[in-house]
Image (cartoon, rainbow, N blue to C red):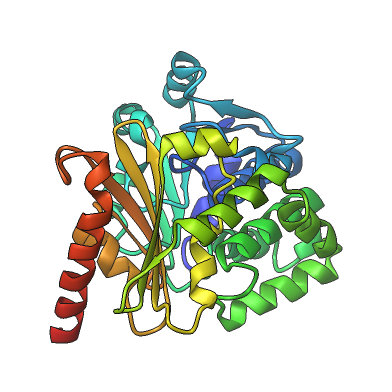
Length: 343
């Protein structure tokens, strides 16, 4: 892997390091950031902080235990000062600075070395002094693992076990527990982490066996009463703010709902809309043959991977009101399929 020696020198020379991930951090973002901050602080003795544009989901908060985390949505001034005062900034699990949303201006203005570690397509390379961009990786956690392993001369055991556990967790969530985006190095990573002592049963227990009853009830109602499957094989669900309030769901608890319709034989693509203030946040998953990435880029101001992507719908820019979402989805689904067939 190229530029490992350059990164090692940057780490050695820096005293104050900030790792920053995308807004609404998912498992891969939070875990890769936590793993790097843990490595820098525990292994290298650096003043390292993970800066989140907004609060991490409670369902994933366990992975950041033991490291310093700064929530920029709660402490914007402190986050801005930290960014400005960092010797080194490492951007994790995003391909463009605007995906940090309110942190983007401070990052662009920061006169310090910026490093990218990411697995998304079309990275904004000009914004970084050094970039590790490998879109074929299952996850940013997988990419980070092989970077840290090489920095340690191939000795996985030199990496703190909490960091290894975080990377196992992030890789597990981003592959949907090895259901997608798995390549040979993904299984190699998993094997080496197990050999190094990572307790995968504990990881799975924290990820999949600690739900609140409200989450299960919300999933059951959405699938039973709010799942629409079009004749084309595209399905969609829309969760309004009122529904979220009635369910009692918390941040991050709808993660994974979009995957479930794909278990049906006649569903080729699943779209899930969750209302936020003034917009719908969109998650898309697809089976081979339909591009979730193309759908997200063409209609939802987004992007991602071939079978897993996301974006946003704004009103009145995209649709007249939030109540027009269902009709608009059915219209763009037909248009998308026509374009995909033509292409």
